[in-house]
Image (cartoon, rainbow, N blue to C red; front, side):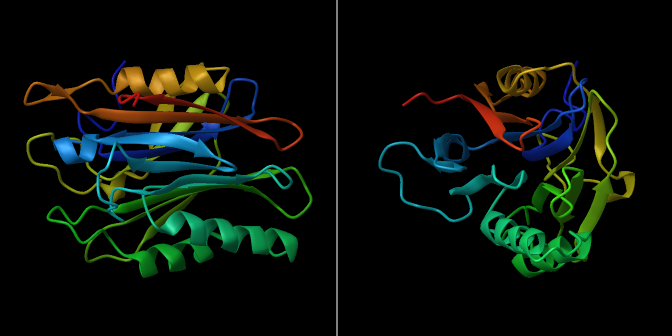
Length: 240
């Protein structure tokens, strides 16, 4: 099996359910340049940070909070940039004031964050899994913001054993272009029943080389239990 978004998806967010209907997510980071690959994902408190290797200078386009979650309410946000914190705080507030977690709030944040100001005009991608107030009924929302267009948002109703994902690029490793929003989120069947197996699955189907080097940086997998507690696992190309 191969990644549904081709050999170079860039950064990729998946949301969905395990075969036994637990909320789940995966996040993949790939990079063509050596600078993009000199990163690793590190757990810190209730977050996962995409940070530099060694004494590399901080870069807000490459170094950011990728995942943040709250085990008391079952909320998790995942994205490829600065928008993660804003999304998390917004949907945490919506939960506590008992407001419906509508997708329009995510659209506003993504439009405000805009695409990344790099040479490829890299889109911003994001995903949310949250609950409706105190009910443990999960809500799944995906979004992408590309250059020159308003942010797209999709409220996903996942089937068991299926992930739904958006990526920054449409997969052409030699000439990356923005993800094709007209097709909506890509679907991916997945039998993983632990966070580690989820991370391994996403990492393995995304194997690809560019100019003789592996483009994969990291993969993160996570699943939520009946008590709203998130369990995560990470795979990093760089161990140092």
